[in-house]
Length: 212
Ligand code: FES
Ligand code: FES
Image (tube, rainbow, N blue to C red; front, side, top):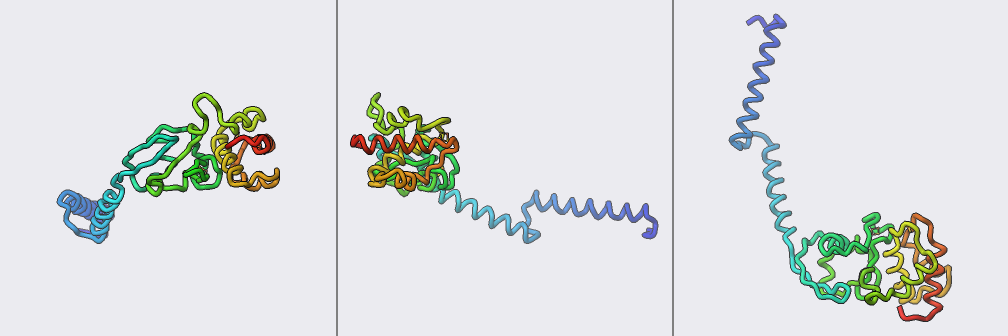
């Protein structure tokens, strides 16, 4: 064959290409370990199997808003996702999902936590309170009433987290002055800028001396 002839060179390349394609297809069809990439794929498969094993659901008992729950949960699930996606308690909001906005604040044993940064399985046996559990039936919690009275919200997205934090702020003894309230509420971001009204609501509840 005359290799100097461009027509023949092209023909040669085409032949080589089809041989490569054939080998590739054979390797795929037969699963023969021909290259390091096949070994990598095998390692990936092993890793996937190990991951699936680790992600198997495990039992979890929680008291949520006064109700005992026995659940099966993957170890990677956050308390926020458990509440919203498995228990349909969507009052707790997902804002940043990175611990920066406070929208996901709930109480665990009466203390505020960011549920987006809390693994559900680490709370086994604990008592969780969400915004849905704050009112007593139809009777709103004093902090909910105060937020309504003082217009402590506009769009309302941050509000459940603000209210849960506000209750904790008073319980912690961090509502001694407006400055202190601002400092201890600084982890709760409000894009609508309802801050002055939120502070007014907290001051009213604090000064009203009602039990929170
Ligand atoms: Fe948890 Fe923003 S969603 S801090
Ligand atoms: Fe809209 Fe706070 S009321 S983000």
